[in-house]
Amino acid sequence: MTNHPGVNIIPIHGKTPQIHETAFVAPGCTLVGDVTIGAESSIWYNCVLRADVSRIVIGERTNVQDGSVLHCDGATPVRAECPLIIGDDVLIGHMAMVHGCTIEDRGFVGLGAIAMNKSVIASDAMLAAGAMLTEGKVMEERSLWAGRPAKPLRDLNDAAVAGMKMGVAHYVENAKHHAEAVAKAL
Image 1 (cartoon, rainbow, N blue to C red):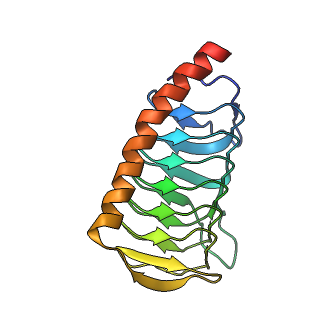
Image 2: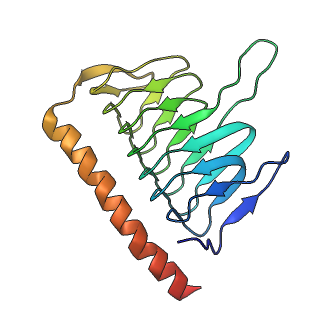
């Protein structure tokens, strides 16, 4: 999956996106600047990852689904730098917006959800579809937060955590099929 046809890869400020050879980046995506994407991760159609003022780091087997926007913030006189740090085995749903936050290993961001600067989605935690995790809020492990602004709703049981792990495995496998299809189509 080393070739990325139809992907806009834009260096800026001396930084060029670094994509692991086993990662899948779909056509229509734009990656700018200090972006690092780990092994077997997938960035789906029409996502924007813009690391022009800080860095975006995506771990292994993580997926960022269609139309999502990822950004970060640089340091200012009144605020420390806000890189976007995403761990391993993370699921980020369609049309999500994640900005200058931390998503720990196995975190989950629902469809259309927003996570803002300095917020933290802990391991095995889920930010519900459409929720907005405001600046500096920290989710507990295995918790579900929902609403705008997001608040704790309940703890996640073993079945919910297992379901997220199945989602990660699905996206790793599905990315291989899409990479083959894209290679044939373009």
